[in-house]
Image (cartoon, rainbow, N blue to C red; front, side, top):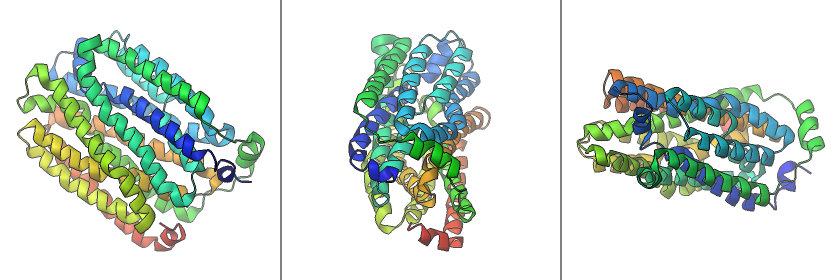
Length: 409
């Protein structure tokens, strides 16, 4: 009996636990966004250009680490089980998140953020588990629900980060985050169920698995590139959004709070539409949802360069979040359908690597453009890249129509 059939009774409960775990870990990872520039300044950086650049580097370090190790963890999940990778990620992230609160300088901050990415990645492991267990005809909906959990964490995190430092201090906030992830680790250990046979699903599968179909690689490559662009678009401004808020005239004492609201707006918009767009992809085809969402996101990106009030930016980020929500579940659905069951973990690991590459590139790109050209230019560059990506995706979906129909996309 295949792995999905043996786990047919577990995937719904596992989905709920993974939603909770993804929510918790994303809260902890994203709550530093509103005060990250302030923490960088507290650790010794004084110039605005230095604060902007180091904030981008420190934030992107976690995702750089995850981009490197996600395919490795995906392969190990295929060999040793998905639950093992979830537990490893939760425990590793709980430890490193707490240690960030003990950073002595900016170098420590970057190294610890990098370590969190190298050994963490709970949300990535959740996608591998649910993507492997859920029936294919329900994959769009299930991945949309899972995405909602992560997006909810991204929404609540900046809000928590805007208020919690006033109560426990910036350093204390990281200890709270570590404790939250520890709760997710316990829930994963005691509630996740998996029927994994190492002999049948691991070594045997790894030794006898056939190579991925060559005809699918243009499709898979385009989907991986699109996933990278989605995260690049979302993250290009967020690490320096506190500075952008300040340029709009918000007083220093309120910048972290207002930045938290603006960042949360994007995730709030995504929560509203993620399950619906995931279900829509199941009905009308994931390619149509991807192309449409790319175009809408690109168009909504441009007006953000012209706002004069922080609440205008919050509204536009909310609308952008609504369009972004349909992209990652649809991409994961197509990739899940494009490979044999034996390669699911590895290929979804590549997907996570692509996404986190975007989360690395976005902050670095936004930080460099913001520091040397201007903050508003970040929106123009990102919007143009999304339009190019929409054109490429449209061409590939038409050029490889036979593959597309074979994948029932």
